[in-house]
Length: 300
Length: 271
Figure 1 (tube, rainbow over the protein chains, first blue to last red):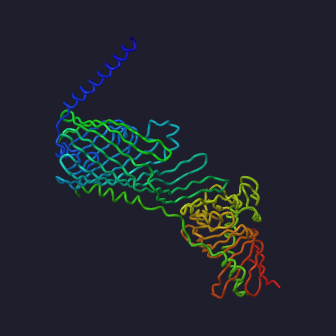
Figure 2: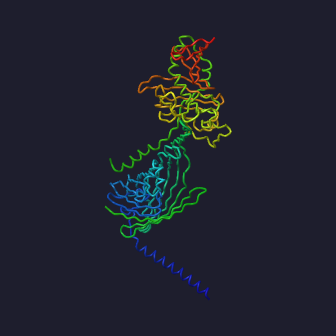
Figure 3: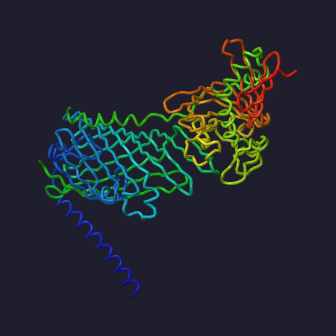
């Protein structure tokens, strides 16, 4: 008798939870604002050839972003600095000492097709990353880390409900400077360059919800070194190794894929929930990252 | 300029970062030819030619000897010591573990691939300084000796022989500042021996006071320099030691023995 009562309570609890979920989804669906995904103020911007309009401002708050680079937190601000030029930075990274700037210019902006060029730059130095321990920052203070992602993005509006995007990215990440450790001195630079293809499919449902399916395929990469490291052997004699290598090789990292759902709530608030998947390597676990981002666009 | 061009300009600017790093490269020394030429000087040794070579040797010989003493620290055991004073302790001897030595051939790691074309080992030696005794503190510049790139064949031969590039800029020596690049070669099984085709300019301030343009060979504690006669009639070889007390001038027809007196060297034909 007691067991039957327990089973009954469990089924009732599951029913209540299901009903709550449906009610929540229905309530949220009711909140989803209608949106014209072809209009400048309603276009999807990330991964597309579209940019903010002049004097338009966008604020982003996100956790574990799926963007590149992925740094866990996003507090972004972007502005339409000019008619065809968007500038943006991630303030969360800036605050931690990783200074970054992104520029996006929509070179071609036609009703059915668009082409944009996206460039950027990030820079840091261990001395600037104040969250690191002081005894770690000081010895590495002459090291400079920088990167420059460049991307060409093409967007085609295949149908009102289907937009296709293809991005081709070239990324340069380098480390330069000198390190002294236990009498040894290393001086020079090394880094990596890579070429990636990033197709993105946007399914626009009922002029309210966008389902975004995308990937990033690593096509090519190369490592380079231009480093001298030397060590004093005895008075008047130092020995060292100089390495000036250019090593083309296969992709440095596995391909990644992601799925997102984006909707607008109210006039300005946009929300996007994503899950990304990346195979890190033959012997590494698969990386599976959920993320949630909110952003607001303020028109000119 | 249209704002749309700004990213394109940045792209072009950043494309400059894509240049491939270049490894150290140089024209290698023909060691066999140098040894042949050293073994068979072609010039006639006579009083006039001896006088010419003595004058040139008086200018370049001490610098060559000091260079050899400096570079000798890189050679493995087996080279007769050249009495290099070491202010920090006892003179370095051939068996000194502090001297940079190459490893026996069987201990040389083999490369799984074709190696690293742009990677090489190098050594930096403190320049002598202006005083008669060397200063090992690197206050007077350095001589850099680059080894061959780590290709499979060079790594496998590294313990035995290999090509080097000796380069220096504003390297202070008693007679002036040295600058130039000279290809060199070492062969552990041949003595060991260290050979170089010197191309060194000696400057006092902005004035060039000498140009050492001789092929030299250090082997078994003996230094040899090959002088091209100015009349183009051939070469004469000068053999000497770091002490520079005596030296010989050898041509195709005989040898002069010279005593390095305080005033001027006195030479006489060896019977």
